[in-house]
Length: 110
Figure 1 (cartoon, rainbow, N blue to C red):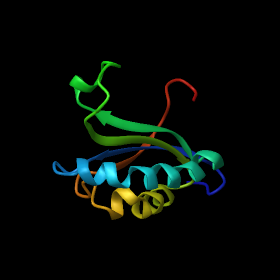
Figure 2 (figure 1 turned 60 degrees about the horizontal axis):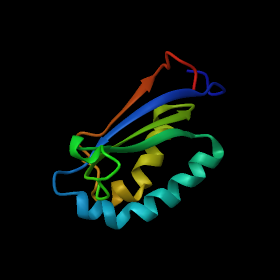
Figure 3 (figure 1 turned 135 degrees about the horizontal axis):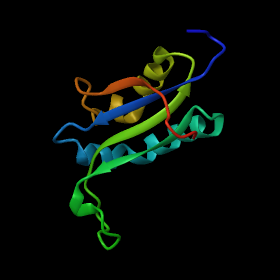
Figure 4 (figure 1 turned 135 degrees about the vertical axis):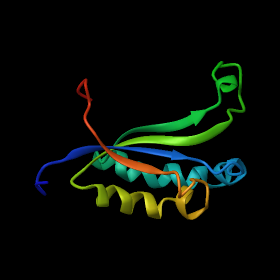
């Protein structure tokens, strides 16, 4: 891969089954840290996976179960470095054995 070209990488980061309380504790730190990546254009989009019962707007306590993010970077290793310093990683929210970072090609331009 050329080091001048930016590629998309999808991150699927399921939480540990008992991770919700740690997620809620680390959430402000995670969001603050990701703002720099949003500002630089490295983080294209991201959000939390929730259970289906959390979908209605009337449900105020969403049950978050993991994260999905799309990054724009030169290499997968670049994205891995971002993930491994994130509070959800260091705070044992994301399941380190199940987290996946995969090259991704958008069917529709982002």
